[in-house]
Image 1 (cartoon, rainbow, N blue to C red):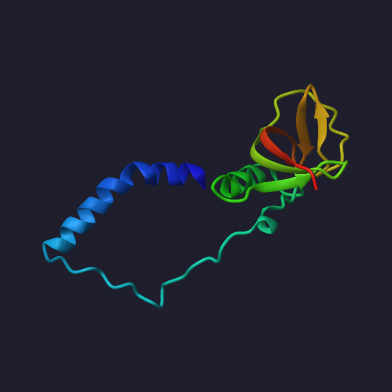
Image 2: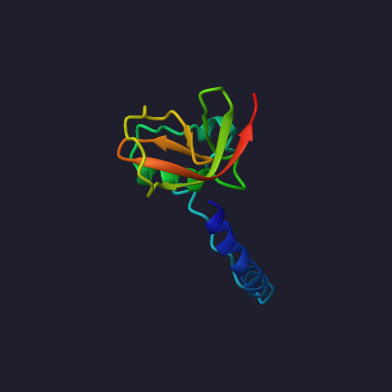
Length: 130
């Protein structure tokens, strides 16, 4: 999500200038083939719930796809606080692997969550009290 938008942010000014110059000089726009056209509706926060029964790589990619400027990927801690997770990664710490899948727990001031194939560490999050 956000990393792709950052790349586009860099090239957008020259892309816009080149496109306008092309049109001003009489260039013909390319018509969109409506048979191949598609769109995706507006994202809302309910689309960001994380399924921790998936493998780590799927979860990491899902969190990245939901990150700013989108509403974010989320889970809930055992007390009901909504954890909007901006960055998550595979933990390199040795942690008891007897935890339940999908139930966030704290250790050394960080949140960890067990998924299908490993323990993940939450690197950046926003707490939302419900």
